[in-house]
Length: 169
Image 1: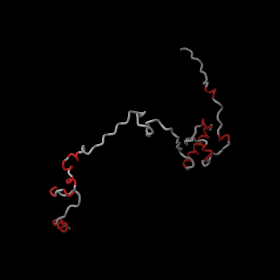
Image 2: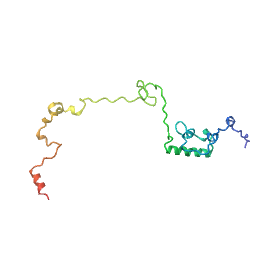
Image 3: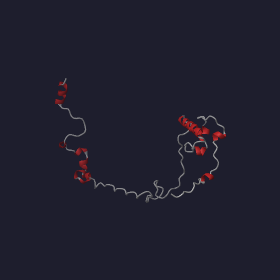
Image 4: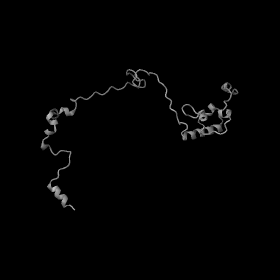
């Protein structure tokens, strides 16, 4: 087995600057109060996330207490859970999803399907029948009495129906 070269330390470590000092250590804060919103906002990103230890310079215990205080402040509605950041967008590309420009080929797939042709009256089955074409057939007066009883409305009660209801106990 050939001899391997000795390991060399990572040169990126040499480029690192000195360790960041925590705001808590710098200001000599001993107790982190969840009501101290200005202090807690320093440990949150603009979107409302808790910043990491390597960003803030906190040690492990400080980070735990800061995280607990931020969570308590969120629960008491002193701090937001998340901030929605809205950015101004440009005019967009032509034919974009918002209809900024002329319709065209979409960048994420095939072009949109053409709209279905509209149905005309001649193509409908009602218009093809001869009864529907005449205006007399469409009017309610033109319905013959031999066609049968109307579908809507209460059933007519005859004299036998009234006597049957009175005879029942």
